[in-house]
Amino acid sequence: MIARKIHRWNGAVFAAFLLLHFITHLSGLWGVDAYNATQDALRLIYRNPVVEPLVLASALVQMGLGLKLLIARIRRGLRESWARAQVISGGVVLYFMTEHLIALVLARWVDGLDTNFYWPASVMSGAPFTWYFIPYYSLGVIALFVHLGCALRLILLRQGARAQARAAFWGMTLAGGTIAALIVAMLLGAFYDITLPPEWLAYLRQFVPGFTP
Image 1 (spheres, rainbow, N blue to C red):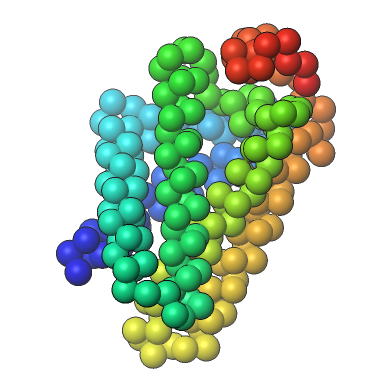
Image 2 (cartoon, helix red, strand yellow):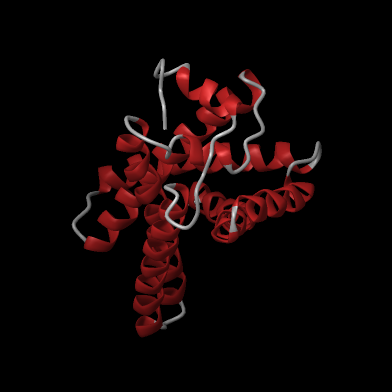
Protein backbone atom coordinates (compact mmCIF):
# COMPACT_ATOMS: atom_id res chain seq x y z
CA MET A 1 0.00 0.00 0.00
CA ILE A 2 2.77 2.44 0.90
CA ALA A 3 4.69 1.62 -2.29
CA ARG A 4 1.55 2.21 -4.38
CA LYS A 5 0.90 5.57 -2.73
CA ILE A 6 4.48 6.75 -3.24
CA HIS A 7 4.41 5.49 -6.84
CA ARG A 8 1.17 7.37 -7.44
CA TRP A 9 2.25 10.68 -5.90
CA ASN A 10 5.77 10.55 -7.29
CA GLY A 11 4.28 9.75 -10.69
CA ALA A 12 2.16 12.89 -10.48
CA VAL A 13 5.30 14.95 -9.80
CA PHE A 14 7.28 13.26 -12.55
CA ALA A 15 4.39 13.87 -14.94
CA ALA A 16 5.17 17.60 -14.75
CA PHE A 17 8.58 16.90 -16.28
CA LEU A 18 7.01 14.59 -18.87
CA LEU A 19 4.65 17.38 -19.90
CA LEU A 20 7.61 19.67 -20.59
CA HIS A 21 9.36 16.83 -22.40
CA PHE A 22 6.42 16.27 -24.76
CA ILE A 23 6.01 20.00 -25.34
CA THR A 24 9.61 20.00 -26.52
CA HIS A 25 9.08 17.03 -28.82
CA LEU A 26 5.88 18.35 -30.35
CA SER A 27 7.43 21.78 -30.93
CA GLY A 28 9.70 19.96 -33.38
CA LEU A 29 6.77 19.74 -35.77
CA TRP A 30 7.63 23.37 -36.59
CA GLY A 31 11.27 22.60 -37.29
CA VAL A 32 14.63 21.85 -35.71
CA ASP A 33 15.15 25.43 -34.56
CA ALA A 34 11.73 25.50 -32.89
CA TYR A 35 12.54 22.26 -31.05
CA ASN A 36 15.92 23.46 -29.81
CA ALA A 37 14.62 26.91 -28.84
CA THR A 38 11.74 25.37 -26.88
CA GLN A 39 14.09 22.92 -25.21
CA ASP A 40 16.54 25.67 -24.26
CA ALA A 41 13.72 27.67 -22.67
CA LEU A 42 12.28 24.72 -20.75
CA ARG A 43 15.71 23.56 -19.60
CA LEU A 44 15.81 26.70 -17.46
CA ILE A 45 13.07 25.00 -15.41
CA TYR A 46 14.34 21.44 -15.11
CA ARG A 47 18.04 21.44 -16.00
CA ASN A 48 19.58 23.42 -13.17
CA PRO A 49 21.59 22.31 -10.10
CA VAL A 50 18.50 22.31 -7.88
CA VAL A 51 15.76 20.76 -10.02
CA GLU A 52 17.68 18.31 -12.22
CA PRO A 53 18.86 16.03 -9.36
CA LEU A 54 15.26 15.95 -8.11
CA VAL A 55 13.98 14.96 -11.56
CA LEU A 56 16.56 12.18 -11.84
CA ALA A 57 15.78 10.98 -8.32
CA SER A 58 12.07 11.01 -9.11
CA ALA A 59 12.69 8.93 -12.24
CA LEU A 60 14.77 6.37 -10.34
CA VAL A 61 12.22 6.12 -7.53
CA GLN A 62 9.42 5.64 -10.05
CA MET A 63 11.37 2.92 -11.84
CA GLY A 64 12.28 1.08 -8.65
CA LEU A 65 8.78 1.18 -7.21
CA GLY A 66 7.31 0.35 -10.61
CA LEU A 67 9.40 -2.81 -10.79
CA LYS A 68 8.36 -3.80 -7.26
CA LEU A 69 4.67 -3.26 -8.00
CA LEU A 70 4.92 -4.99 -11.38
CA ILE A 71 6.37 -8.14 -9.81
CA ALA A 72 3.79 -8.10 -7.02
CA ARG A 73 0.91 -7.71 -9.52
CA ILE A 74 2.14 -10.59 -11.65
CA ARG A 75 2.31 -12.80 -8.56
CA ARG A 76 -1.30 -11.96 -7.71
CA GLY A 77 -2.41 -12.96 -11.21
CA LEU A 78 -3.51 -11.13 -14.33
CA ARG A 79 -6.99 -12.47 -14.98
CA GLU A 80 -8.51 -9.08 -15.85
CA SER A 81 -7.68 -7.39 -19.14
CA TRP A 82 -7.19 -4.08 -17.31
CA ALA A 83 -4.56 -5.64 -15.05
CA ARG A 84 -2.73 -7.04 -18.07
CA ALA A 85 -2.80 -3.63 -19.78
CA GLN A 86 -1.41 -1.96 -16.67
CA VAL A 87 1.39 -4.51 -16.19
CA ILE A 88 2.41 -4.77 -19.85
CA SER A 89 2.43 -1.00 -20.34
CA GLY A 90 4.31 -0.53 -17.07
CA GLY A 91 6.92 -3.07 -18.14
CA VAL A 92 7.43 -1.33 -21.48
CA VAL A 93 7.75 2.06 -19.77
CA LEU A 94 10.27 0.63 -17.30
CA TYR A 95 12.37 -0.77 -20.14
CA PHE A 96 12.09 2.50 -22.09
CA MET A 97 13.19 4.63 -19.13
CA THR A 98 16.11 2.33 -18.31
CA GLU A 99 17.36 2.44 -21.89
CA HIS A 100 16.76 6.19 -22.09
CA LEU A 101 18.77 6.97 -18.96
CA ILE A 102 21.68 4.79 -20.10
CA ALA A 103 21.68 6.54 -23.48
CA LEU A 104 21.57 9.93 -21.74
CA VAL A 105 24.64 9.06 -19.67
CA LEU A 106 26.54 7.89 -22.77
CA ALA A 107 25.64 10.86 -24.96
CA ARG A 108 25.72 13.70 -22.44
CA TRP A 109 28.28 12.76 -19.80
CA VAL A 110 30.55 10.28 -21.61
CA ASP A 111 30.65 11.87 -25.08
CA GLY A 112 29.87 15.43 -23.93
CA LEU A 113 27.13 16.02 -26.51
CA ASP A 114 24.23 18.43 -26.23
CA THR A 115 21.19 16.13 -26.15
CA ASN A 116 19.05 18.42 -28.28
CA PHE A 117 16.92 17.57 -31.34
CA TYR A 118 19.75 15.66 -32.97
CA TRP A 119 19.95 13.12 -30.16
CA PRO A 120 16.70 11.28 -31.00
CA ALA A 121 16.94 12.26 -34.68
CA SER A 122 20.38 10.65 -35.00
CA VAL A 123 19.15 7.14 -34.24
CA MET A 124 16.21 7.65 -36.59
CA SER A 125 18.41 8.66 -39.52
CA GLY A 126 18.80 5.25 -41.11
CA ALA A 127 19.22 1.50 -40.75
CA PRO A 128 20.27 -0.41 -38.72
CA PHE A 129 19.35 2.09 -35.97
CA THR A 130 15.79 2.56 -37.22
CA TRP A 131 15.11 -1.18 -36.98
CA TYR A 132 15.27 -0.83 -33.22
CA PHE A 133 14.36 2.79 -32.53
CA ILE A 134 11.15 3.07 -34.56
CA PRO A 135 9.41 0.43 -32.42
CA TYR A 136 11.29 1.65 -29.33
CA TYR A 137 9.97 5.21 -29.56
CA SER A 138 6.52 4.16 -30.79
CA LEU A 139 5.87 1.55 -28.12
CA GLY A 140 7.48 3.66 -25.39
CA VAL A 141 5.18 6.62 -25.94
CA ILE A 142 2.05 4.51 -26.44
CA ALA A 143 2.82 2.43 -23.34
CA LEU A 144 3.28 5.57 -21.24
CA PHE A 145 -0.14 6.91 -22.21
CA VAL A 146 -1.78 3.50 -21.73
CA HIS A 147 -0.23 3.30 -18.26
CA LEU A 148 -1.39 6.81 -17.40
CA GLY A 149 -4.81 5.90 -18.78
CA CYS A 150 -4.97 2.89 -16.45
CA ALA A 151 -4.13 5.12 -13.48
CA LEU A 152 -6.71 7.73 -14.48
CA ARG A 153 -9.30 5.00 -14.96
CA LEU A 154 -8.76 3.72 -11.41
CA ILE A 155 -9.03 7.23 -9.96
CA LEU A 156 -12.36 7.81 -11.71
CA LEU A 157 -13.68 4.36 -10.78
CA ARG A 158 -13.04 5.12 -7.11
CA GLN A 159 -15.23 8.20 -7.56
CA GLY A 160 -18.00 6.12 -9.12
CA ALA A 161 -17.56 7.64 -12.59
CA ARG A 162 -17.60 4.37 -14.53
CA ALA A 163 -18.40 5.74 -18.01
CA GLN A 164 -15.86 8.54 -17.62
CA ALA A 165 -13.23 6.03 -16.49
CA ARG A 166 -13.57 4.01 -19.68
CA ALA A 167 -13.58 7.15 -21.84
CA ALA A 168 -10.49 8.48 -20.07
CA PHE A 169 -8.56 5.26 -20.67
CA TRP A 170 -9.35 5.10 -24.36
CA GLY A 171 -8.81 8.84 -24.76
CA MET A 172 -5.34 8.58 -23.26
CA THR A 173 -4.57 5.56 -25.44
CA LEU A 174 -5.68 7.39 -28.58
CA ALA A 175 -3.65 10.45 -27.58
CA GLY A 176 -0.59 8.26 -27.04
CA GLY A 177 -0.92 6.63 -30.45
CA THR A 178 -1.36 10.02 -32.16
CA ILE A 179 1.58 11.65 -30.37
CA ALA A 180 3.80 8.63 -31.00
CA ALA A 181 3.00 8.71 -34.73
CA LEU A 182 3.73 12.44 -34.97
CA ILE A 183 7.03 12.24 -33.07
CA VAL A 184 8.28 9.22 -35.01
CA ALA A 185 7.30 10.76 -38.35
CA MET A 186 9.02 14.02 -37.38
CA LEU A 187 12.26 12.28 -36.37
CA LEU A 188 12.23 10.27 -39.60
CA GLY A 189 12.22 13.54 -41.57
CA ALA A 190 8.65 13.32 -42.85
CA PHE A 191 8.00 17.06 -42.42
CA TYR A 192 11.39 18.56 -43.35
CA ASP A 193 14.92 17.49 -44.22
CA ILE A 194 17.25 16.64 -41.32
CA THR A 195 21.01 16.93 -41.69
CA LEU A 196 23.00 15.51 -38.80
CA PRO A 197 25.92 17.57 -37.48
CA PRO A 198 29.36 15.88 -37.69
CA GLU A 199 29.50 15.20 -33.96
CA TRP A 200 26.33 13.13 -34.12
CA LEU A 201 27.57 11.15 -37.10
CA ALA A 202 30.73 10.43 -35.13
CA TYR A 203 28.58 9.32 -32.19
CA LEU A 204 26.67 6.83 -34.36
CA ARG A 205 29.85 5.53 -35.95
CA GLN A 206 31.05 4.41 -32.54
CA PHE A 207 28.37 1.74 -32.79
CA VAL A 208 28.26 1.17 -36.56
CA PRO A 209 31.58 2.13 -38.21
CA GLY A 210 31.13 3.86 -41.56
CA PHE A 211 27.42 4.54 -40.95
CA THR A 212 25.86 6.95 -43.46
CA PRO A 213 22.29 8.27 -43.07
